[in-house]
Amino acid sequence: MLIKTKSNILNSEVTDRAVFESRREFIKAATILSAGVMLPISGHAETGKNIGPYSAKLHVTDREDVTSYTNYYEFSSNKKDSTILARALKTKPWSVEVAGEVEKSGVYNLEDILKDNPVQERIYRFRCVEAWSMVVPWLGFPLGEMLQRFKPTSKAKFVEFTTLYNPEIMIGQRSNGLDWPYVEGLRMDEAMHPLTIMATGMYGDELPNQNGAPLRLIVPWKYGFKSIKAIVKIRFMENMPGTAWHKSAPDEYGFYANVNPEVAHPRWSQSHERVLGSSIFTPKRNTEKFNGYGEEVAALYSDMDLKKYF
Ligand code: MTE
Image (cartoon, rainbow, N blue to C red; front, side):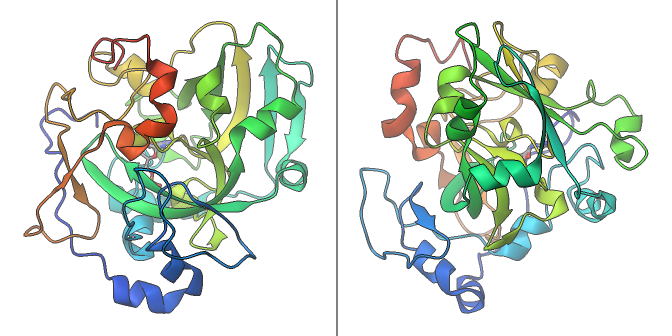
């Protein structure tokens, strides 16, 4: 994202749905479920159910494509290299510091967090600001339910998330591409929205290191850079946090970063997206406002000019 001369367009191939479906039973159901449908992992997936106007049939992206092409600048700005280098990260034990405008601040073991927050499956579209997209069956839990347990004070208007800082292993942190550690943030109502999840797994398994293990944010209506990986700190704040990409190039990466085909990135259009795994001959997909989740989230921004607050 930082390198101004690089094209954002990827060469990719058609999602190998047949191979994928044979791999996992539940994914078969996922391909015909609507965006944002939640499945208990142990439960039987309902198939063919249409929910709301955003129930376009989702073709889950091949796991191989999702796990071998990652954006993880702590390791490398090269999507293949970051996948390999991230293997060095030790994700057990893991704890998360909770701080700021909150009653129950402290350091929580991830295991304890997971005891309080049973994991469910969510199949979401994911749209990167670089104009590629994928559909991923995440395992995770609603962020809002976790945040409530920490009892934010009435002063908490924003939540800030921070990634681990460990330049010995995260070798990308030795250079100053971004102001490390990687920080992201949400407005409190965005964080509490039921579509927002903390992910701990994907494709019925643990989250691979390169995709943000052991704990990452997923906000499906926002560009992927909001979905911060390897979270070690959550801070409740009165004021808007300074976030990594926004600080590095505020005219290119807004704090809100809602997917919006009408607002071009200064260096490329956001009207279309290449679906990961699709061939260079496959037409690009039309990008949807709020990544197709407008019915659920547009009201959060009803009083805002989304061209100004991009
Ligand atoms: N989180 C951290 N800590 N570091 C990163 O470099 N990249 C972001 C986001 N979260 C990033 C991050 C970007 S730009 C995208 S598009 C998504 O992760 C990519 O997620 P994926 O690699 O699982 O596809």
